[in-house]
Length: 189
Image (cartoon, rainbow, N blue to C red; front, side, top):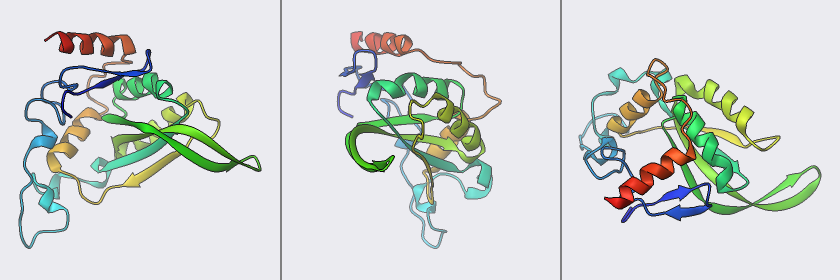
């Protein structure tokens, strides 16, 4: 991400935040879990080419799952994302660009602009995340679709496991003001 950016949910616009990512964050300025090179090995099981250690420490409860969820507008996801991450229910929420959704609702075909989010969590936190997301979501019938993963970069998977560990100290809800303050500090550097 050259130059980086964060979305200011309060002002409904992208903001410049230096690299946009804290040092060591996946994809951040310094080496982080997703910046480690993938190793190549022949004769290994599918997906092991993504590098890191063996799959021996990865059980079904610790596997990465990705949840697709749509929202009416970007500012609707802001506080929800901070709440989910603050409670260690997910490691990351990607807020993608607005898209056009066409669907049948109550007998009529409708079109709406929506924002798709990719929410990354561990299988062990999935049920609790879905329950909390359903409570917080503005739709009566939210789209919450869970996708399994077949191969994940091991350092990234370990990061997700650490961030969603229920025994880890929770930061509690993170406010948009806190994120804005961090972005302002990064921009000043």
